[in-house]
Length: 491
Ligand code: BG6
Image: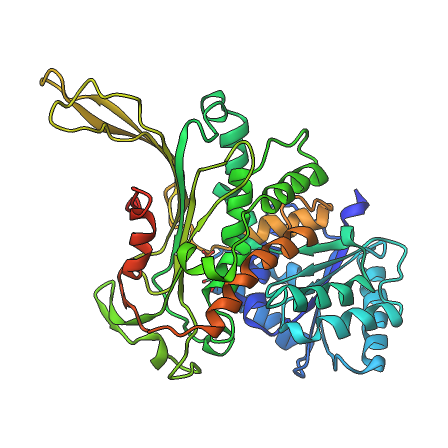
């Protein structure tokens, strides 16, 4: 199976992502036997580290991730790791890199397959890409692939520029744009729930669905990422990528096959059907917020403007809620509501599909409406599905009560575990790009989001407007109230 024998060249090997996610993920793959002995990891960064220091760091990160590692197993694993201090703007550095790569390829019998993983600040992606090509590093007997982390630009224009740069060295089908939400178990389950269940697929349209709600709330603040976050905000950080990817998976038509290009083309079609807004309409459909001080999990926390490396007058949004409409046959008229924010009440990602009411209510004499049927997809921290139905209240004759059927996939704490990265890395090694975003998806998402950020940049706003520990600003509730709905509490 030597088409999966490969070297992972990790740019940003001394960084946070490598430490928190990538090393533990690579180790998990190794431990599970999903990586043969024919692999190598070449860590690249500016810092002057020796192989030894690098390996110590890899080892520490695996232990910190609470993975039980057998000492011997880990020792052997670490022999596959090399480190190179690289000046990204110096051609000679790349020659050293190439020599090192040839070296490990010989040592571990790897047929020139190379994955270049960009886990670092995006300003050098383009430069690195050009050198990889000009110095012949992408010219191997095996395959070459690029895995690239967010942020993929900060608007359509910069994303396009970045894409053009990396396309000098890699073809579209060699580019794996990571959206770690696509590696989450229950996000991958959306397709199965929809397309493997007659019960849902036959109801999955505007005749039966009243609205869809996607919430991704976080209780943490910006932590030590104030510098990045203050130039980004929730719209770019969460909506352009993770939230719109979930929308696409919920809204897309069934693909004719589970092949990468079929799934992607359905997602692209769904994103193309998003109704664009004019600048004047933005405030009608989108709400922004920024957290003030408050209490989260019993602890007092400061407001966003007092966070480290954040401008004390910052207008950056830490919360976004929006109403999306999809103009196609299946979805015309069905609002899809999204909301995401930092320093909210709890950490939870959840999708609620609310079905339409029946034409009349035979029961509950004093209440006009039955409880609506709901399908809830719990993405994290719990992983599972709930269905809310109506049942008869025991004893009383004509009264109904909502009954909740819960299926729990994994009730352990699954937040941001390395598993998403583990799965995605494995897919990239296998050459399966289905759970990575195609350029067209990125471009369409930016196009949708750009009009919102441009409008917000030029209009005034009074921040902070929600307390830490709350579910966001009041305007986010009013967004649904205008349509006669309300957010279902996250469960
Ligand atoms: C990242 C964002 O993409 O996703 C972070 O940059 C955010 O700001 C994170 O906290 C949320 O991911 P998860 O897996 O914890 O929901």
